[in-house]
Length: 621
Image 1 (cartoon, helix red, strand yellow):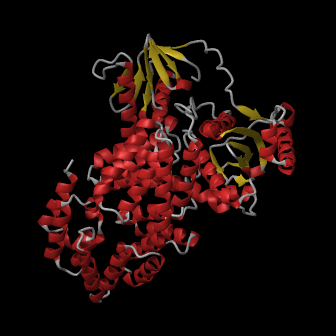
Image 2 (cartoon, rainbow, N blue to C red; image 1 turned 60 degrees about the horizontal axis):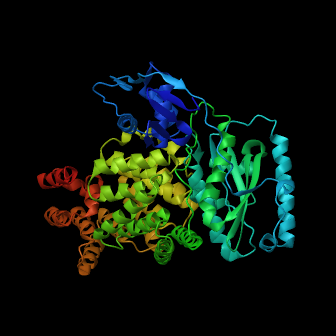
């Protein structure tokens, strides 16, 4: 059911994600609307939970809780009561049923064409003004005209051919046509933004940025890239920026046969760049959707496409450029640019979310105290208020809730993030940690292969999944994933650390020592040093562990009390370990949420004080 329809007195408009009755109008989340459309396709008939989950979340693992929450939001929007329903009935142990009939209504007249300039071929393009000539340059202008002509011919040549089924795609790094290497950050940032926009498509698996950036300036063929990433289609294109204008050319290519399915070029002012990204992603998804007609709403429309101060957007792209490098100095540069973005445009939601992510990373790495989680929460909530469609703030808030020992609240945030962006690999990682800490990971493990396809060539993502499997004591699988991360980036310290942890789990501390030393060579993190000492202690050499305890205690700031407790436990000093853990508890230390999973604390599992500590953390919210 694609068009508008009525359910009782309510007018349902799926393309707008809204329902209205009289003067009352309610906007629904895209996935909540898809649940309603699925029920409306079978009015009066029971629809099983399995059918709803497969229809609305076809390529994403979600629990029944996500569906239950969506039904609750529908009932709230419809003013329905679960105890005496007028619209949605719960059928025990089976599913749900739409009680009211669904009556199709005539579509409203088409919306007027937006006032942005779209270029499909030279013959349709307006005569360029002097500023446009200066923008492109003579030689570059000729090249673009030729490209547009080729794109138009390709578009005409494939118009009559049926579009192959596309359920997954990758956006390759957009080419920087400015001729200025200093503008690479802009092209890379636009690539990431287009990926983010396309990731909102519910039935489309979109490869994350980290994996696709490996193919920047590659000589590999598109079919080969597609095979390596496991996708059906590829988007490639270019970015040209001059002054306050930006032009993007994009092509959708069916990768197995290297067939061009669609090509288009767009030009806008920088202040309208958000709308430009939305239009391009919408056009691509429209091409894909023709083969997925069973999906009522493959990609929900963005709630709005506000303008953004060009200075703020440029600062934001620079911030994400340094963020991707993920080193201490680069994180500091990223923070400063996010702050600039907010200063230039106080209503730019992604600026707040990005700045919150930087602070969260610094807290997670022990570079800032746990008290700075308040700053993270303020920034992420501000981002949510400015743009409720963003998934990133909910992903960040998952970790804030976890660090505050609020497992239920963390899981709700992760589920909301997955509803808003099913292709976000980091949201899946956060959700899996929630399941693991709640003892429910086994329900999700069969889907890990599907989840890893979201970012198959990303060392951080592979290492994160490996760390989850290691904590679930699935050591062989963890070792395989972390080894892959090392193969992709040999100097990635976190990947070596994860390999070492897996070897510790397999009771091979001698092999773990080598990995921990390589991790330390890449960066001196406290937990790298701690685990090297733990592995040496497991081989009977206690001296390094005692020396690390001395070094950590000399800091006298309490941030390393958790690491000290693990070392004391491995050395057999149970009383000292428990006393140190109580100190962490008194400060509400974030790491205590992971204490039940920490292998070093296994000697404490039979101690009633440790059990009570874990219980207090679990029941603290």
